[in-house]
Length: 198
Image (cartoon, rainbow, N blue to C red; front, side, top):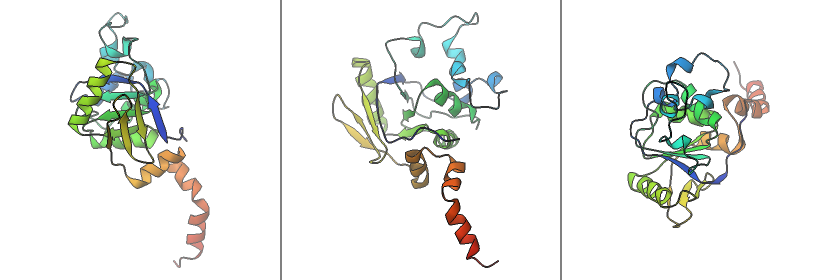
């Protein structure tokens, strides 16, 4: 399934300065029965967003109209715990296209890259600056430049570079998942097979 191309994202951000957010908090296990990547956004952070009677918890950031945007800024060790892909699906389906954190669990990071969510790992110091600027002004915009691998706080001009696997970067720039990539290079694969002795 192809995803939106990711080149430069400029957006306000939703702050979630909580460390060790695991995949069961991102999408509780009881919502993992579906096999299609749809509808998971409704249950993103379900137990943090809603009371037992299904009413929204006013003190949770996703229920606070002050904050919005396509960027989620999480605390250190975001996406730890089990390897469920559904956690990344929920983040994408809710509308986030980028998660910024000072550290990601590897499997969660890989799952995000596979479905069109860019995980941007920054230093703890830069993450704190991002949180501080959002707290000062919730309309603060963050620019995430994938071609240059740089994230910038537009209000201050402060920026930091981030790393990304070259193959995954190319896929995100083109809006490809792994299957799309293979289809895109099908002719090269066929040509290679023709010219390669068994």
